[in-house]
Image 1 (cartoon, rainbow, N blue to C red):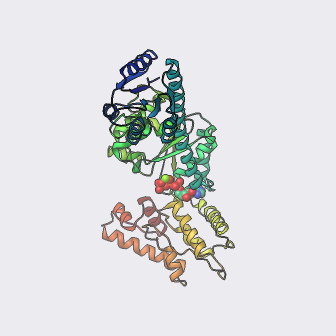
Image 2 (image 1 turned 90 degrees about the horizontal axis):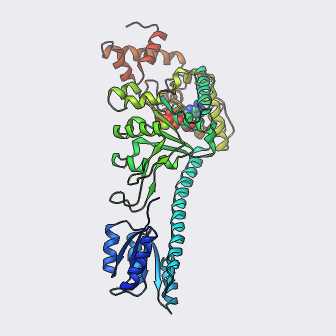
Image 3 (image 1 turned 45 degrees about the horizontal axis):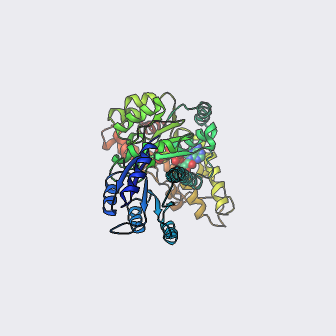
Length: 462
Ligand SMILES: Nc1ncnc2c1ncn2[C@@H]1O[C@H](COP(=O)(O)OP(=O)(O)OP(=O)(O)O)[C@@H](O)[C@H]1O
Ligand SMILES: [Mg+2]
C-alpha cells in the first residue's frame, strides 16, 4: 500500500519533532513546517494526504491556514492540534472542514488513532467517488437504454442472435462488431452484456471519437493524485470502473495507435496500472470493440493495429446492412410503429401496401436508425382521419432517399414511375462516370453491391 504523506505544522519545535518522529516510526512519510508560509510552499510542491495543524501559529492562525490549504486541494484531510481551553476554535475548525482534532498535551497514541481514523475516512472518500462515477454511468445507461430489444426475422439476424448467445456464455471472450452506421452494433453489444453473467454489473460505453488524444491514457487507466500537472485528485480509469462488467469501445479506429497497443496488452494480461501508480490492478472484464468502417481499410490506412485486430477478430460479429436483410423490414416497421404509437398515445395505424413496397425497395443508407426515425416522424404526423401511416421523409443520400417525400408530395405516382425513374438515374450516372460502377454508386449515394443489384434488377448492361 502507498505510504500516506503527512505534513506537521507547529511553531513549537518540541511538538513538531516529537510528532514527526513518531509518525516516521509508524511508517508515514512526514514533512514539517514551522510557519504557514512554509506549509503552503510544501503543499504546492508535493502531494500531501494529511495536514496536522496547530491552531495557534505565527503569520495566520491554524483555521486560516486550513482554509488556504483546502482551497488549493479540498482532498487533503486536516487534523487540528488545540491547546487547553480552545474548544470554541476547535468547533469552528470542524465546521470549516477539519476532520479531527487532538488536544495538547497529548499522548502520541492519540495522534496515531487520529491518523488511522483519517486513513479510513480517505479510503471511504475514494470508494464514494468510485461508486458515484459508477452510479452516474448506470443512471445514464438506464435513461438512454430503456429496453434493448433486437427485432428481426432474417436468417442473418437469427445468426447474429445465435452468436450473441454463444459469446455471452463465455466468461470474458472479447468481441469485434462491424457493420454500417445504424445497423445495431451498440444494440448487439448491450445484448451480449445482458445475456451474460455480467448483466447485473456495468455496461460502460466509450466513444473513442469523442476523446482528445492526450487524455486517452489517463481516462482509460486512471491516475494517482498529482501524477501529472492538473491531476489534483486521484481518479479511477474506465477499465477499473467497468471491472466485472463490459467495456464497449465504439469506433475503435479513432483510438490512437499507441493506445491500441496498450489496449492489446490489457486484453492479454487482464491488468492495468494507473498513471503515477506502482500497483497493478487485476481486471475481470469483457471488451467489445466496434467500428462502422471496414477493418481491412482501417488497417491499410494505419488506423487499426493488425495485432489488435487479430486479437479481437477471434470473435467477430458482422451486421449486414438493412437492405441486405429485407425480412427484417416489416417486423421492424411494426415494432417501432407500436412503440411510438404507444408512447405518443396515438391509435396504431397500418402502412399501405404501396408504402411497404416502396420501403422494401429502398436502400436505407442509415439502416435501422433511419427506419426508426421515419416511423417516428410518420406517427408524429399522423392525423386521426388518416387511413394509413404515411412515411413522409427519409434521410440519407441514396438516390431513393426521397421515397417518402415523393409518396406524400405526388400521391398519384405509381411504383412503375418510381422504377423507371430509378432506371433512368442509374443510366445517367453511369454515363457521367464512363461506366465506372464505384464512382456511379458514390454519385447515387449507394454502395457498389446495391448498384449491381439494381442494374441486374432493371436488366441493364454496362
Ligand atoms: N435489430 C434491431 N431491432 C430493433 N432496433 C434496432 C435494431 N438494430 C438497430 N436498432 C435501433 O437502431 C438504432 C441504431 O442502432 P445502434 O446505435 O446500435 O447502431 P450502430 O451500428 O451502433 O450505429 P453507429 O455506427 O452510427 O454508432 C438504435 O435506436 C437501435 O435501437
Ligand atoms: Mg454505435
